Length: 243
Image (cartoon, rainbow, N blue to C red; front, top):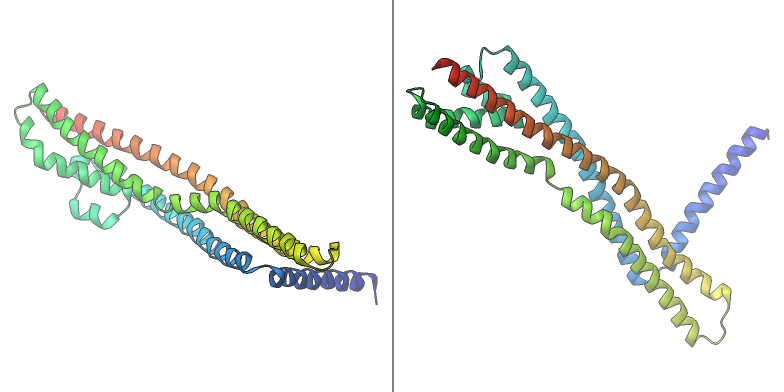
């Protein structure tokens, strides 16, 4: 057997032994530990589904926003945009522009005479509608973040609970045993510590994913507010310029 083949065989043996050891630790866990391990497995699936789903959602929304920005730059003015075209585009920015145009359609007659106070009143209605739209669109970016944050916070405590419970059972069993030894205590403690390891495996990637998504969401919310301000300014310039 060559040296490289020997190394590969050694690594394979170590992997199989580690997997067998983890299975043994699971078997040695008490009922509470096994239940907590099952809950942590569910948490892990939920966390990864939220992280991947949110990344795909944010990328899709950003792509729709860029497409709307291109069409907005090509248009002669915001007030000349078509409602049907906006509804087909989709995306937060498109929906916010649609809200601004609907507000202008409802209250545009207020500023027919071109009076400054009337125009200010009109713009107040439009800006209020845009603020409500920003709040509604923010919910799309922030949805399921509470679930991911709860997993990040709760998983380590569940692991700690399983470990403490398992160690307590192990020492309790030793207290009634005829003979106490390290060999008798080790299996129970190993099974108990498995819950902490599982909790860290769930929590560590989740906290990185949560922090990245949180930062990405903050940037998206700032972009929403900036876009709202830009649309309001452009509508005001077009309204004042037409009077």
